[in-house]
Length: 135
Image 1: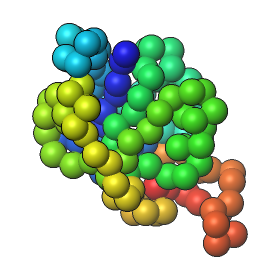
Image 2 (image 1 turned 90 degrees about the horizontal axis):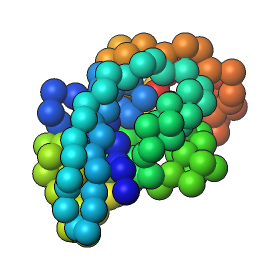
Image 3 (image 1 turned 90 degrees about the vertical axis):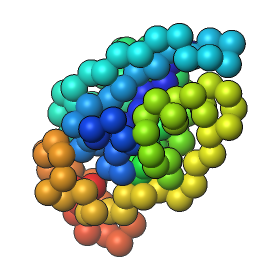
Image 4 (image 1 turned 180 degrees about the vertical axis):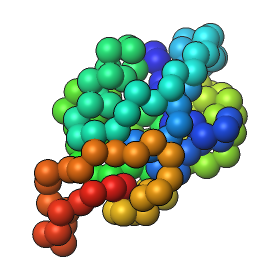
């Protein structure tokens, strides 16, 4: 299995799509067996699910992620765990040993504006019916 953790300076990033990089971990038989950090190639609607699927990712771990992104990963059969904080290596080890627990997304709509990798304008509406330009 391969997991991707949204990364900001060695910690789990609260803003999945805007994180500076992703740390990819290979997990086998309850242990981390490999690690690779890749820069975030950019954030626009629908791109990151394809990009990370192409890297063989089966599960995403992040502090927070928007509902649309979570849905797009689900459509590709990629699990999503949000509400995770702390060191990426510790999060990967906790995942591998079955001890990682997620929670509520730490990223609310619009909360990521001005953080990390900028995003192109979305063309979809959020729950409140307004256009969404960040997150």
